[in-house]
Length: 384
Image 1: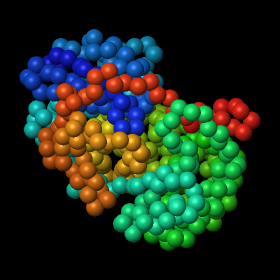
Image 2: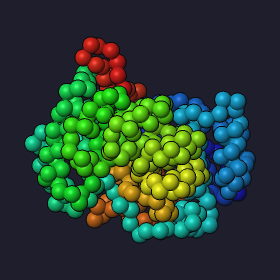
Image 3: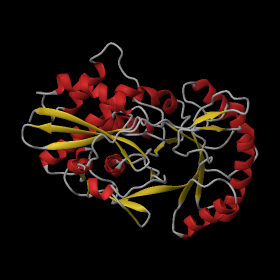
Image 4: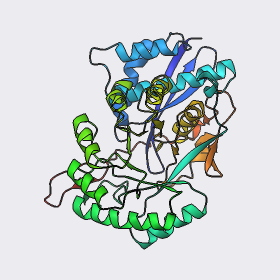
């Protein structure tokens, strides 16, 4: 079964652009994948055009060989753009293979280890009384793992001031109150979106009673291993790290040193199923559970569900909390995963179990979008 074409679709959907990839074959079987490099989709589309040049005509079922060729076919191997392109193609090839063999993708990964995928839910409300009311409602609804944000996640392209000292003071106060409301059984964490320094993170964690947080996600950038090692000596809160990583090599030093306690892998950025399964195996050797990133379209969700189904070391899968008009979802995607009893049920349909109505994809609907530009009180740029 030969690859005959690879098509890319970059278009605005709800609250962001999505970048879908379709791999077609000479037997009429096709597969869908997705890239996760939000905000730089055109770069990924360009990389896929380069890969397409030598992938057409190749055997679609030789997934691992094609992965290696894509990764090693240039002098400047790796990197987030190329990894995101490889991820989308790899996911699509697994979809093709599952349909060809008439089995779900999780079967290609060794079979499913659970019928339903546990999820964590996110409150995006700014800290205050409404936030406390919201997390209390989430607990009443049966959610067992809840994540807070810092209140600066809005999908706008305006400049906003981020004052780290004010942020950590406010967050520590209200997260301590949230823990009192939730009790000790509910998991509570926060995503700081790599906006802090080592000193700010330590100060933040030390402002709360021990046991307030079950995890802090991405408090600082991941480029400096020694910075995380320094941070580990200063705080006792588990780290959720890995959303920025694009390969097993990126994960390796954080896994080997056990610095990440929850691995925030993004299957649409970290090499697709082929690489993600290796990363999960690495993490299992250090008793690290996977906590996949899942902020994209239903293609990402479907792929993540199959991935989670096959894992032994799974904590929770992310469910996107973001605002936006999602009316187009059911028009474009058929058999998309939907939340039931605070979980995703694992589909037994062949491949990913999801399909895309290409005729419903808006034409010329790509929007150049930039995340908010966060600046410090002195006017200098900081991380979004």
